[in-house]
Image (cartoon, rainbow, N blue to C red):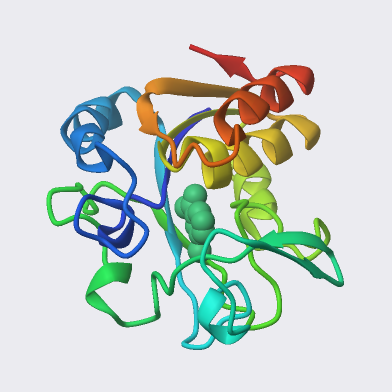
Length: 196
Ligand code: VGL
Ligand code: ZN
């Protein structure tokens, strides 16, 4: 069983959004076209409470700076994907009808969650692993936003958990901040993620 995992194709990560990823909207139509090739389609949705600890505004700091959190270094982001906001909604053209499951993440006020599997403490599960295993899903293809953060963390965790993980790089777009894209590619390859 092979699932397509569509990471965070939300308004705030698309042009005009609060944490816009260049060309983030250009992957929507080809992702929709890919859905029929898979046994299951799963969407993730970044879903932060207002005042989330990953927001620069919560620390009186500048966006795109680093702080130390109890679980390690954390990039401070502009406020984005606030629960119930327009920015947190999926891009209006994304085919959400085909999704079997929508995984929300980042709802814990004290911990960010880039990965679809674990919060950034690398311990607190989202429940996705159990869902996949109980459905007999072994192979995962990742697409979406952003290549160097949520796609990267999700694919790395998938490979570490023993899933066969592939990232369609042509159907992802990156924030690419501070060499994060190159670091992500290396990190994914090191744990056995296939980049195509
Ligand atoms: C993401 C930064 C903060 C992502 C989410 O979806 O890659 N990046 N929250
Ligand atoms: Zn976020």
